[in-house]
Structure formats: C-alpha cells, structure tokens
Image 1: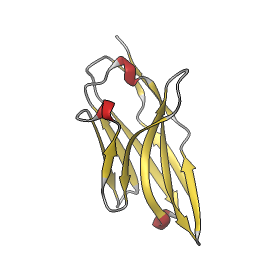
Image 2: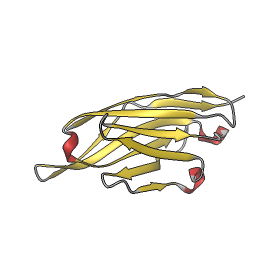
Image 3: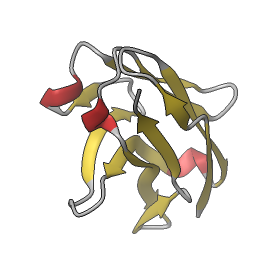
Length: 119
C-alpha cells in the first residue's frame, strides 16, 4: 500500500496562490496515477486534477488555466499549484493515489488539507 501526506493548505485572498504537496511512501512503484480531489461543505467530492505515471494530466473544467498538477519522481511528491484562486475553490483538498499491487487494485487517500479563499 501507499501512504500519502499532504501539506500546503491555508487561507488566501481571492486572486492569490497556494501550492499543495502530497508526499507518497510505501509501495510507490505500484502507483498508476495520483490526483487531487476536493470537497466543499454540502457538496460531493470531485476530482480536481490527476496525473498518470506517464505524465498525462487532466483537470476539471472549473480549474483549467488556473491550476497545474505536477510530480517530482525523485521526491515521490505530487504538487497542485493553484493560481487566481476564487472563493468557490474553498474546500478540503484530498490527495489520492491508485494502482495495482500483486494483481489487486488499491486506492489510498491523504488526510485532507483545508483551502479557504476569502477576503
């Protein structure tokens, strides 16, 4: 299995920037993809951005052009650079990783980090 530790959340004004980090440990060789999800109060958790082991990325429409997901393989870390933040980006952000180990699919989540966009 893989363990995930997130950092980088906080309070920022509209138009500001934050960078989230997600450090992976454990069976990292079995990771297929990593991503960031978010969940706002009263809403369902949604996929924000994802990156595969091959480097392909995808984003939810609402963050395209503002958020960038990237990975540092040497540090086993995935980042989410968030620019031009809006109040509607306020949510708890969760790191996710998934893959296959010994023929079985697995799915891991971080503990979540709060992002609040407010003046």
